[in-house]
Length: 177
Image (cartoon, rainbow, N blue to C red; front, side):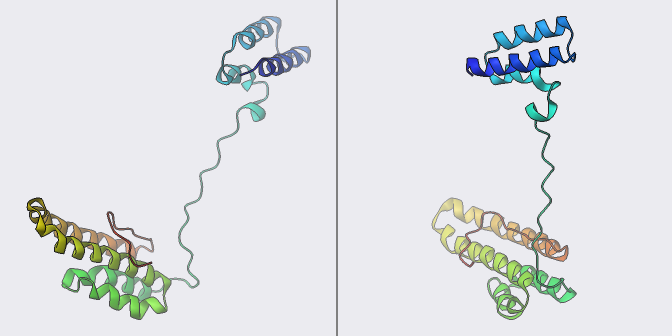
């Protein structure tokens, strides 16, 4: 903070006093606070009620939630295809289920494609972990935990697909874009 910053605040306080917006006691107090301020944060309260729009910017409006925009409204078939991309691996079609949904419904529906790619990447990650983890003792213990997590996350992904929302699996290596 510089002396120039203090001088600007003193000037604004003096103008407010000359316009009658401050009485003598308040003017003296604000001058003292301005002259002894060490940081910009010390100067802000002095000016806040004099020029509220200049010193304290109004809080920005919360950003609207951005939902993916699809060219056409989602149909029941889109939702069903997206759900199938998450559910088919639960019935033993680990990588093949999402791949089938990607190659069939993903060509015509961006919504199905988005969910199928996410499911395919997740199940490729689970397959890779299942193959690589048995080389360690800890990995052998982790495999059942990973399979249970895959089951639970598949159900959560399917429920999310029904509600027209995107879904991202955690800890996923995204090989397919």
